[in-house]
Amino acid sequence: MKLDEKVILVTGAGTGVGAATARLLAAKGCRVTVNYRASQSEAESVVESIEEAGGEAFSCQADVAEDDEARALVKATRDRFGRIDALVNNAGTTAFIPFDDLDAVTDDVWRRLFQVNVVGAFHCARAAASVMRETCGEDGAEIVNVGSIAGLKATGSCIPYAASKAALHNLTVALARTFAPTIRVNAVAPGFITGRWLKEGLGEESYEATKAAFEKAMPLQAVCDPEDVAQAIVSLLEGSDLVTGQILGCDGGMSIAEPTSI
Image (cartoon, rainbow, N blue to C red; front, side, top):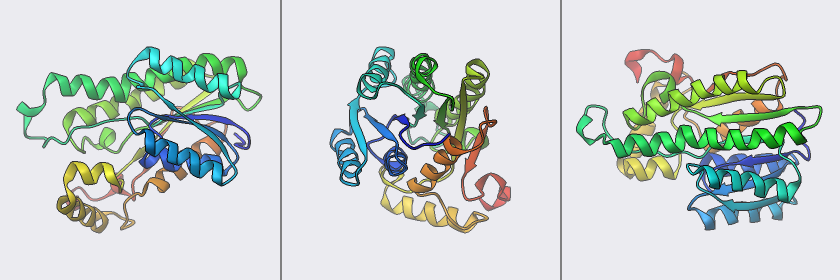
């Protein structure tokens, strides 16, 4: 897909990977919807930075876990820009619970993580697909889901998070089959991502120690910044029109590291 002047909706775009993706897409000439649930000031800052650089974007509040709000988000994007060419399902949540602390994994944790990470992505994909089919041009349309190495390796912040990302990867393949040939659906699977999310979850000291350990263990001796994941997302959007139903790792080699090194 040639990205210039394409309309792209990015969920969870107030901070982190979503914000980096929105900025990168705008720099490539896209018109961008910057979705947020609670990070209003951050989302408005992303829009401001895009506009200052000569791009076009607007922020839109919606909790994608709620179907009516996801549909309203898609409608707002179409009302503003006239169409939707691509969707980046980045909105997500987690809980920081050691894998062996099974009693701390409540049903509420399971429901919250699956409702946002899996059902929320489905809500947005379903709503956007109907608009894409009506409005996309010869390039077709695309959806990129933001999964995780946790969904491939059963690692990460907690068991429900790993399971929810595995489910999102499976949803990616199912939607790729369902939406073909008009809409391609792929996912990225990042590893450790630097930034506020992990810092707040792990605590500053644990975050720095964990980051250093991962960097030492990675084949590429580096972990992801949000901008690295944004580049991977854009590579799927700009790449071959024959790529669909694929999960692209972006993890510094974590998925191929020796089991004893991590």
